[in-house]
Image 1 (cartoon, helix red, strand yellow):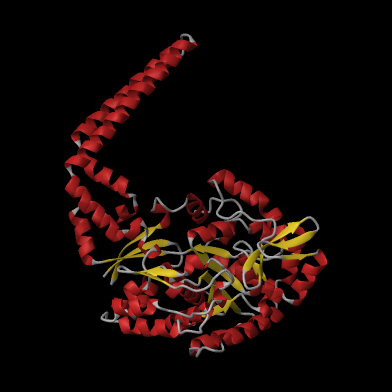
Image 2 (cartoon, one colour):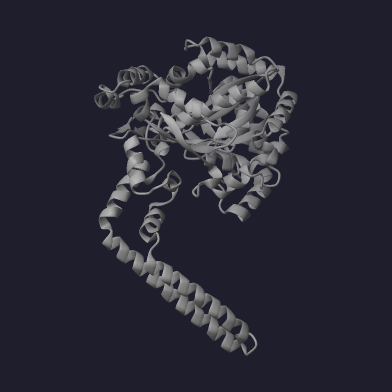
Length: 528
């Protein structure tokens, strides 16, 4: 396997403009939170001033308890011991507890986090950097995480849901039998099957299953896993949660940033609520304020102000941050320098900068994660025969087909030449018309619009005629497009890592790590 092309995010049409502008440092106030050694040096100083020895001690204690059921690699044990040292910092990514990791980009986020920690160690040898995976154990959207897809099958787990997904226990992992049937004859299929059976053993929670999976895949790289559903860690958030309950500070503090982002880029990724907290019982439900009291939505639970604050003081683990509060939780309890996330994640982190400032909490460096595309040699040969360049893989199918059908088309050339002449003539005519009365000028504009519309219709008819004429070519092109974009989506958003690991084993992870470029996000296309 080898990388045949690396395409920077700025050169990919489908990457959101907000992400491109952030990377280009075109958004006022956010430049210091982009990837550079200077920014990391500043972040180390900021975090060191903020993060206390007591916080490090609490974090170390919580991590030891959470990881005590795993046999840690030596490098993990070393990382865990160094957490209490004020020269140690973390680089973090996070994800939902998708069944058997879900889509492959789950893996890519972790690999980029590991490589970023290694990169920082090379450039700041006097410090120590620990890669951390934040498990989204408190999420309650079980339907979103309960499945994964391979090239051949769709796998799903069925368990009672509604509460924090990390607490859900595995009872009937029937999907394992079908997975074994698909992969038993693969080169590394047995390894995957044994891993799945170990992780999803009946009685394990989804939190335990994910820890086992991530440990087996990345323990040797020193990665530590953290579960926010934890009494010790939630105690660190009591004052922030109290302020949110009483004053709704997140929404108020982020209003200006959200207004700016909305005006410039349209709808923001996540809109804050009045209170950005859930209440955890057997289910996870929103906390809402009703007059002087507080209500747990869809539960027969109501609190006075004094009662809910007393509950927070006694049982902080019952209070769960939503998507916008979770970054604040993470950055409060970790000596963290950078967060590596998908484009959507980075976009909602950007909403929070002013809220972080109001808390006097250092806002981290944000790193959009890189992407991978793995292609077979035969797929590349088909693309070459059809004169399809790798850069064109990420245009829409409609755009690709139009470009291929109309390339060097004589009639289209004539139409475009005549259309340009028409535009030039009408420009001259408009200039003259402006010297006469208004009604004549309006007539010229209307006639120009009518004639240009006719040219548009002719070009559409020409394209339609070419599609009919080249139906076989279009069918082959669409089939190739679907090989590259299964389900008309990016490969990493559809296929599970098992599709690649079953063939190459740990060498696949090593290839991803070797080819990963951490200083800027890229789409890395690999042939194998």
